Length: 85
Length: 456
Image (tube, rainbow over all chains, first blue to last red; front, top):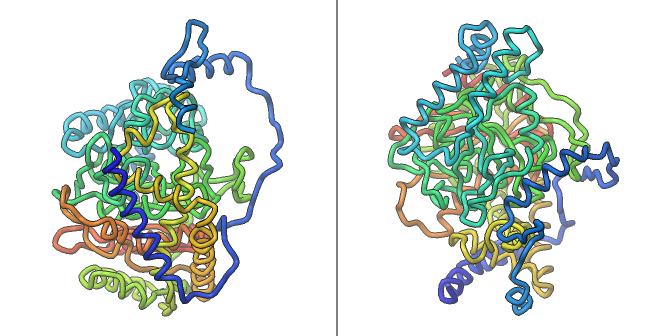
């Protein structure tokens, strides 16, 4: 895994280097984050989802969970993830 | 002559072909040939029942939508409730969609029958159709060659005649590249015209969902169905409704078509000969051909791969294996991991200004160049891919793989529309002409594609 990652990391950096080389002569410009600046940030709330649909959605979502207890609560390996931070 | 989809719709409406029969035929064909082509990775067990419901509506004279009874394939990164949205990855191989994407809701409302989920490059990270965890897709139009990617399944499904229409996603050419290699019609709409809600994103500032079809009228019908404002979307153009299919045959008189000498610098001469032949046809059909300069077009490629890696790294942080699926870094393929690692590297605070923000400046430059060219013209035409598709399984370098996207990426960076129509063949392998239009210039783009299709 570590060796595989190292090789992939190297090839990942190659395109970064080619980018620096290709753009060194270009002038400074404004940055474009989105091609069209049509943000719809303030959205209306709309109608709430009916209770039955919400319950069914929850059932569907829980069916995808990798681990659940008898009450349908999500189980995760806390220690494993905490150790990586 | 480019009216196959419209004719099939008419036969269904007249009752000469039922929606159920249409679905049965599609399923039979898939059953016989999909093992070889690998264009579908899951079929909809409810497809026949859904078709039956359409037939009953037709018999009772009820209103049915524009796609009534047509069979539809959906790329596996778009959510269809009850079917798996795997992104062709082990990460999500058991993930069953909990809801319909907005485009899927619109297809269903239009009477389209979703028959299954299409194969693709893993997480849309690929240009060849070879990186799927479910195995590579074959090219029905050029046996032994790659079908292109990342919408390999949708393009191959259309080329093999498995269904009437498909939807794919295009971030840097993922609809147009396989459409070209498979000899079918593909359209990447203007950014913000089609809702992305329910699409598992690769690069949120670049992704667009679009149609892949047998003919231009089919692509136009699908685009009409899925396009238009969704009030729940954050970045969306304020367009209520669009119509294209009944305006395609207005001809090319007065149409200004741009061509750039910069395309030839990046493209195999054999492909350019086919493209030049198509340009001459367009001239004969009454269009005015105008030369435009796009001097920095080759710089778009590396800028794109920086931007998309940062956005993809961000998008994949949710695949941590806790709420659903598996942790992406543990099970993904090489190209997916490469983009995640690159995105992580560039996102670091000390490199952000040097790489990411610089890439966004190049995006500005590419957009300015294309907009300037499109001020003098209605569309720009040229090759879709710079080279012929390689043989399936042939090892090529990462940079050679990325090079397939040289000519399609600029439209994504600029947010303009782009469509592909078969222009001819080289050694029996299809070559697609790319037609790039203005922001919301889909009608002019489709008119040019339709004229070329009708003249074939």
